[in-house]
View 1 (cartoon, rainbow, N blue to C red):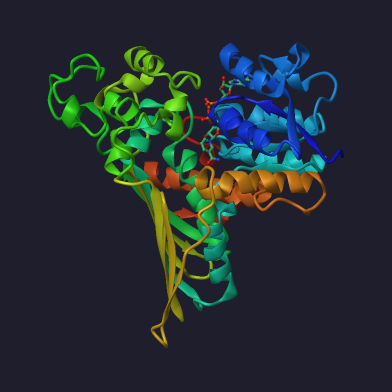
View 2: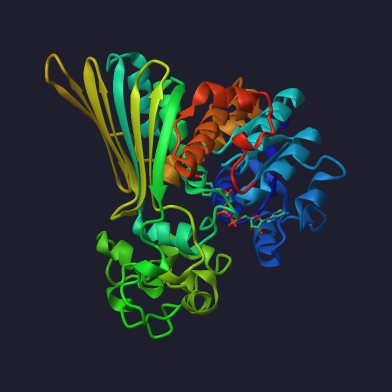
Length: 451
Ligand SMILES: NC(=O)c1ccc[n+]([C@@H]2O[C@H](COP(=O)([O-])OP(=O)(O)OC[C@H]3O[C@@H](n4cnc5c(N)ncnc54)[C@H](O)[C@@H]3O)[C@@H](O)[C@H]2O)c1
């Protein structure tokens, strides 16, 4: 394989263009995009323009890109959640190595099918569990695996989704409905379930879950007379944390975190503004998107149904108890964790602009404070390192990626089991659940309710 790796993009949206596309622009000695499939003409043209792609390398759908001659060394699939399986299977069948966005698929059966297909084809199928690649979680993993904490007895892991991220993605945006994308525990928290499994290195034996959509619904509206859109003269707009003009035009969440008062932050922040008008960050384009599009809707009057609070309790085969909390009401985006072992306690904060790990030895009382590397780029540097590893594996510099399909399957399994436990108010025996899944069962017991 040539030193400069040639990639094809399936989906040139936020992840395809803004994350992986940008990586290639910043590392053009190592990697280039040579083809794209994207149905939205504006996005396709923008992506193609960045890489000077000729007309014959531009496709409106993955079927056209993947049929015909081999066009690249590997394919990056960054379509929406329900659009992962078909192009991934087709790409593997056509002999491509694949980087696939999470979640792998929206049914457990499809997750298993993808894993089996990649292994049968002998191709790389790397899943974008980007947080495993951060310095923060690598350090937590290494500390736990070194035995420094002794046996881990309990692990509390919180995924604190900020109120504005929740409103953007899971109330107004693409992941607001489980039947159109995937449930919150899969769409968002499969990262966390993956981290928990990887950090402990233990499989879960049993699991239960509760959770609900507590706040972002019509009966929670502060007043009965508020309009369906924030810009339609909403009487509480100025006081509402979820105000669309407040978030996207005045940047209130970022100002409240101390970012510059007098600056138009749309070009420096990019996300989430870039998702409103196909990357067009001009103020008038954003305003028009708020007047006409989904992101201008009142959070109390959307068609969302995914939960804004969920707790999963788990016990591993070794007896470690785990409490995982997800909620969409945090002042700041980030994860917080605490692991208590028989020899030491680890506390960690992985928060926007602040990362710290503290390890306190039980016998001496000494606390070691670690500040992981605050790498630039999305997900605390995880996006960049994930791409770097994908390219290294393609170059033959690594055996298999850290987050290949097999390694990622367990977190997806936990997510499906947690959703089942929540919806049916049951405790799931994971050994039984796992064996159904691995047998490739199509039993309704192992498929998401909406599938
Ligand atoms: N790894 C992470 O941390 C992370 C973070 C955010 C999102 N994601 C995941 O990444 C995926 C993409 O998210 P996004 O925010 O970029 O979504 P997006 O909607 O911005 O991009 C998806 C793109 O796929 C295109 N598409 C649709 N049908 C297609 C087809 N037949 N052929 C080719 N392209 C097609 C769409 O037009 C769109 O531009 C989702 O599955 C999401 O859950 C992962």
